Amino acid sequence: MPATLVTGVLFDTVTFRTINIVTSSILLGVYLVIAGGIIAYMNAYDAHGIERGKVLRYVRLISPFVIQFAFGALLSASLIFYWFSGALSASWPILLLLALLMVSNDVFRQYYLRPGVQVSVYYFIIFSLCSLILPYVFNSISVWVFIAAGILSLGVMAGFLWLLSRAHTHMAAWRKKYAVHILIIFAFMNGLYFLNIIPPIPLSLREAGVYHKVERVGGDYVLTGEDETLLQRLTPGETIHVAPGEPVYVYTAIFAPAELKTRIVHHWERYDEATSEWQDRDRLSFAIFGGRDEGYRGYSFKRDVPPGKWRVSVETQRGQSLGRVVFVVEGEE
Image (cartoon, rainbow, N blue to C red; front, side, top):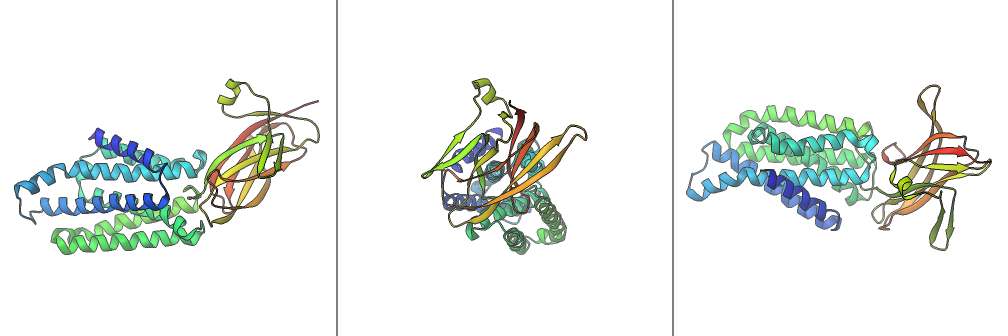
């Protein structure tokens, strides 16, 4: 069992970072169909609804391995997409949930053999994949795309449960109970989205940093940063020394699919030692256009930046976080 889970995760990590979104979607769809088919088969077999031949017994024997591989691959794919599209500081709840589901898929595998657990996890995966793929289909990260993903996931799951109840009478009696589980998951996912915990897929922060100067020369950007040792580069955070009146630049490169157009916000905040809170200092935005593998590049800057701890959150217009640049400003004579 652990081997099938680890294999699924490793396979996804390599696959979904190297192939295009169309191929990824097809592969995820295959996993989804396999998982749904195995759920239906296991329930039919255990309810004595089908003839128990020798071949079918072997298929039932390996079914838990197959469904664990499929669940592991689907959950790890969601984790990979969410991980690369959001800031850990904002998206950790959904990342932690996915990680726990992946671990419990192995540690508590006996519970995954229960129809109610299988159906609940299966719907969570369907909703997650719909919210991953539809932004690519419509080249948009608008709210209506997520709402459409939720409606589509409900429709797919309703069809799946209808087919199960038609094929197996014992499933019809449990359909209302499953519907309650599904609606709870639906409400939970919407709550995460409107609290800006679900990251803005398909955007992905490729590069971010704080600099003394950013200027465009031809088609490239020339970045003038702080001189740092190797140890300082490996240490989280950065210190930048600023002379009076000198601006501080924050540069970002953000990947977006071709034809996707949106605005990115640099949310500047300074830490107030007296109140132990982060205080808003500015929200500067710029438009980005998709299609560049290295990311669409843009920057913001501020003059007369007082010494202290600063952070600049890279966000969408509705506040979904892509990443964050944290640095300390020190005065320079």
